[in-house]
Length: 175
Image 1 (tube, rainbow, N blue to C red):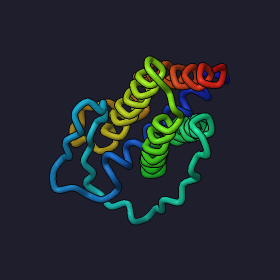
Image 2 (cartoon, rainbow, N blue to C red):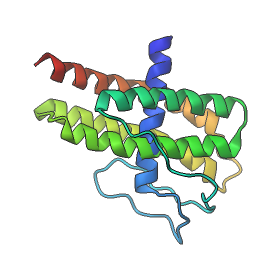
Image 3 (cartoon, rainbow, N blue to C red):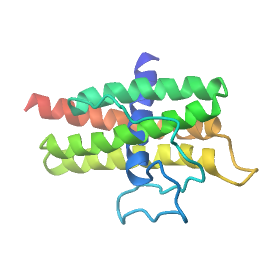
């Protein structure tokens, strides 16, 4: 159960980093278009985020970032369970920021061949999953699933992506 919990936490963190990078925290006039092939889900924000800062504890490695993602994912799940709306939304954005940093770490780890592809796909998957959670916060569709339901629906994908990144790190360490 701890591995699953840690996996989800890592995944949520990664998505927040990516979301913040891809989406940012400032309002947009229209929804941004994601770069082709990134797997990122672009979401527009109709509110300001001036009430929170971006003093995020940057990871010192990909493995460190995955640990931080696990923690942020747990934090998001707890906030969603407590119906802590804006605080949960902020947690998703923190994950987006961390995902951006994890993408950079994945590039700098020196993965080659299949490991590089697997790491990139895993980060793309995390971005997409957490993008869906972020989108649930900002949708105008009152028939849409709430963020907690969306997170639950992508949890398996998040865990799989997290495990892929862990496997890539382990494979690199063995060499």
